[in-house]
Length: 90
Image 1 (cartoon, rainbow, N blue to C red):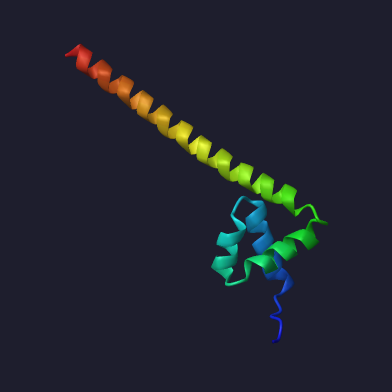
Image 2 (image 1 turned 135 degrees about the vertical axis):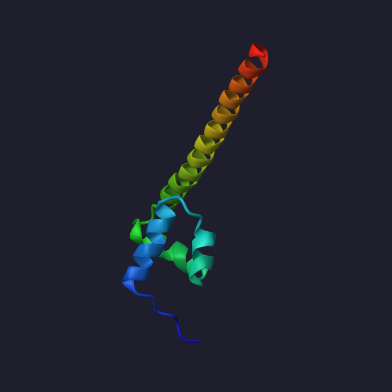
């Protein structure tokens, strides 16, 4: 079976998305590449520090989710205060 060859630009694009916080499985699926291939690229690119990169990626996703939740709760809290102020004035 012949190995598939991917260009350097595609590898850079895939790895950049992972380093920005995307999951390896999601990016691999998006590009139609085997997850093990992407993990091998990551390992080679980072000199074997792929675990650190993946942890950083996970923390970025978690941070984004927490910021989204804080924003949503702040909005709901502020909206609730405005509504309760209107009710008391009447």
